[in-house]
Image (cartoon, rainbow, N blue to C red; front, side, top):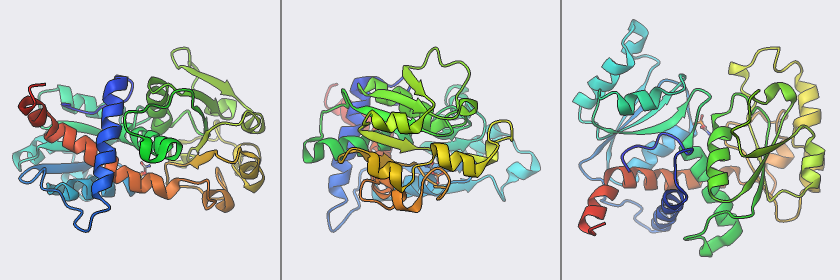
Length: 320
Ligand code: CP
């Protein structure tokens, strides 16, 4: 794998392979010595132009557990504030020896520009770009669903027939987009639930059903319910007039959480707006996988960095 820019172009075989390598990585995390020597001598740069807790820290943990060196770059406090361009910033970091660049950027398409412009030779991983995609979030969500469904028997499996309902601010959500493409590639059926103003206008290319009524969607007994964060920073009053009304009609509260099937799980990519899209009872209930998702994120990002930086060498050795 040269880059990971989206899930839309990921094949089913490649997606299952990433999840299987993540299983191997997760197994190593139960050992007394968690660190693997695999990426010794390699450097991973975290290039973050937008804020992050989970993604940046888990990429750092993943790289360190594979023995890579890590350089963390945050646009805040950097020469970006003096007008330095993406090209000059990336080339400066490449000159310090970057082998892989993990980029989060407010502009949709920035990771692809970095990967295809010829500015740098390092592999590029999209850690979230505008409203476009967040592929490693979708991979860790799929990993979490697969693990809850198949347990120790997960390897080699996809998510055929699984019914996943994604609820909330679809319009602004790169997490929703990456999940729609990945989950359908893996054989799941995806339903989107949102107020009409938070659904993209043209969904003709999306392999989804749309429902505007959360209680109706819950009555259809989804296997997984994914609650999305209301992205206040990208919102205008035209999309989102009233928090109390939103929580009442589209929030997951204790009553709706109890109405889900006994085996249904509840996901949230974080950070959560407790009391808005999800209540504290629902977020902390046994069916919530919020913290499992965070733990699984490290294994999935280890798998992605491994396949990006060492996988090609291993495939050459294997004659693949
Ligand atoms: N889920 C997610 O991307 O969280 P962060 O913004 O904290 O990285």
